[in-house]
Amino acid sequence: MTAKPNAVRDLVDADRELALLRELIQAASSGPGVEPLAEAAARMITTATATDVCFVHVLDDTERSLTLTGATPPFDSEVGKIRLPLGQGISGWVASHREPVVIIHDKESDPRYKPFESLRGSDFTSMVSVPMETDPGGLVGVLNVHTVARREFADRDVELLLVIGRLIAGAMHQARMHRQLVARDRAHENFVEQVIQAQELERRRLAGDIHDGISQRLVTLSYRLDAASRAVVGDSATAAEQLALARELVDLTLGEARAAINGLRPPVLDDLGLTGGLASLARSIPAVDVDVVLADARLPDHIEIALYRIAQECLQNVVKHSRATNAKLTFSMGDDQVRLEIVDNGIGFDTFEHPLGGDEMGGYGLLSMAERAEIVGGRLNIRSRPGSGTAVTATIPLPSTATS
Image (cartoon, rainbow, N blue to C red; front, side, top):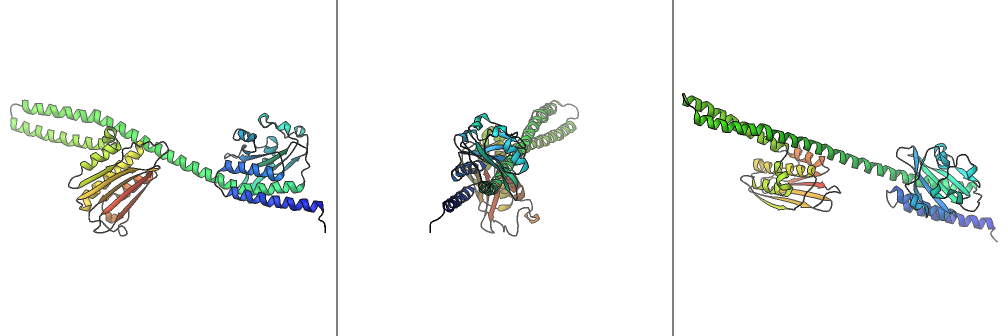
């Protein structure tokens, strides 16, 4: 029995459509990028539908305009440059009304038509424009195909493009959501960095004010008291006693002012940088020998401060609580993160019985260290058990602008 020509054509079309759907599914599974998916879809659709060009317009995040996101050559160079408000042009009308449009010829006479010189719209005779929709996300964009020669697009052609549009829309909706989440995370990271930088600028200003004002006056007052003590006459014993008390008060106040300066902004970071600051910190620890292995690197201020404060708190814990005789401080830098680790040979503790922030930890400051790491996007890990010492590791991701 001989097959009818139409039946053979339908069989070929069905095979072609199945091949197209397989390619689209593969493209949709390849990654979260909106633009690569739109570009792949435009190329596949043109081949499968025997049309001359395909344009994929995607609804932007404001949901008020369409952006050309995918196109077949030579129009791929216009991707990202063509924007169309909803309601304007054929694509804008389709996006607003969620209905397909088929134009067989003379599209310039259609009042909805809006030409784009860079897309050479006058070269094309027939076109189909369909909405790309998905159930969870609604309208995602508009899919257009064009032919130079006049073509009678059948209902079946339109239905195929609608099916393709729905398939692409689902994957593209996920890609858009992923892009928005990445942008939101990046904005949050930038916000945190700006907040920390603002805090540190204010702390640096206050530290400077205390150093240049209160501290200098106290130093001058101390010199004058010494001079007065040497020059006193009359009841020298009483005067000397009062001057000695005043001198003691000046020393205490000066010590508090210097401690406040160091608390607001570690001066050692400005003088020596993070590597030098950590080395200096290790040398200042009493009763514990601290070995250091330090990478020579400069990082953004907010990360350097966080790492220095974590090391400072951790080494204070070693002195106060661990009964350790030796510790090792390691600072290393990888391609995308920095790592600070302090390991001691002290008595250790049970991390299950004494979690971060537990009251029974009695001033260990573990929660404070963890918060310092988290606020710059990092994490703190503590490994310890009774009799086996403690290892504290802070891992912080590097921003793309960080340099070694």
